[in-house]
Image 1 (spheres, rainbow, N blue to C red):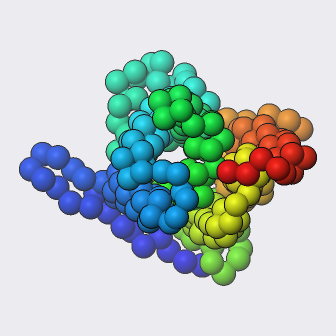
Image 2 (cartoon, rainbow, N blue to C red):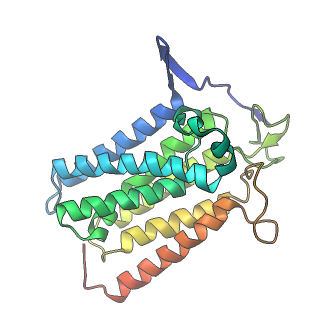
Image 3 (cartoon, helix red, strand yellow):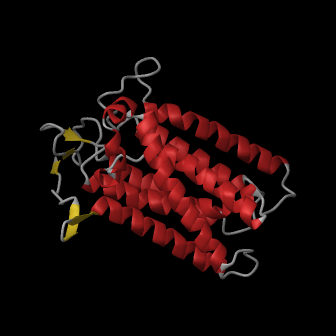
Length: 263
């Protein structure tokens, strides 16, 4: 059994302003994604300029923050925030929904595609391979915040988290960092390294993330205020992943049904 390392969620203070590791994790993830896209843009025939990449990252960041927060509010904590509306702006305390952030990024992709006169999936397929970088840093932020811990376990790497009782639990944040972050990044970076049919990279991302998240939810403790939705076992996260899995599989089917169209 392991003990949580007790990392202070506050990285440092600048006078009255507290800089949290959770916020830093987002900044690192976003800038890493920008750097990787900028590096890939230098390849011949990428079809993207440095300015277009910067705009894509900028609008995607807005989508992540607005969509992620609204998703957390609507999907997971609506009664609480209706009673405490000012708490919606306290992003440093955590409380971001991936599925909400994804919807926000989809809106940002649509806007960039319209603005730059590019096909929607040309933008989505270009951005998708670097999204797992942000997932990796974000899950590390969840771990430092000692939130979203796993279900009880007797495995040797079970960890006792603050405010979760004196019970060893799965460090599910680290599972997700490895699978949603590193594993999915390697898969997508390799898959997108050569020309692929339009929609296929986005399809791999949706199918890969949805499947991994669905499986990890079996060892991740559900929010205490949410109960099982189907047969008393399916979590809210799993329910939200089902459309992702179906859409990802559908995009791949459509992409390889018409393989002549290459991004």
